[in-house]
Amino acid sequence: MNISEDNTVVVKGSLGELSRSFNRDMIIKMEDGHLRVSRPSDNRVHRSMHGLTRTLLSNMVVGVSNGFERVIEVKGVGYRVEKAASGLSFRVGYSQPVEFSVPAGVEAAVEGTNKVILKSRDKELVGEVAARIRRIRPCDHYKGKGIKYAEEKLRLKPGKAGKVTKG
Image (cartoon, rainbow, N blue to C red; front, side, top):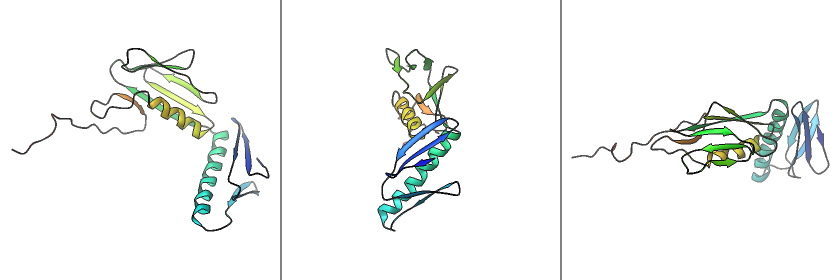
């Protein structure tokens, strides 16, 4: 772990290396093998930056040692995902398949025809790629079709026929 004068921290681990610059007000020190983050004052901005800095550093350490994973499911009749040469190919009800290129630093694996597993050492990058994939065809709350996160619980709405009228 390296901490430079301009608050840039470089973390190295078994999965690679991550680097990030932090706010100059935050004081980051390495003490007894632990990173310590402290703030210069107790005002609101410094308190919020203190928590953010601590969490981002923690995510960097976890990322280079264990990595992060996000699972995405494609639900619907005829909806499927395939590994393509350029990245991923989604068939989700449009007239043509939607091609999605996976950025460098993220590994995408397709399990079956309806599950995508994204892996990376950068938590922010995995989340951004998963959100961009989900935007291709968000889940419909009436039919339950679309692209969703595996841990996401989808509440289906009853629709017009499901409403009860008082007579």
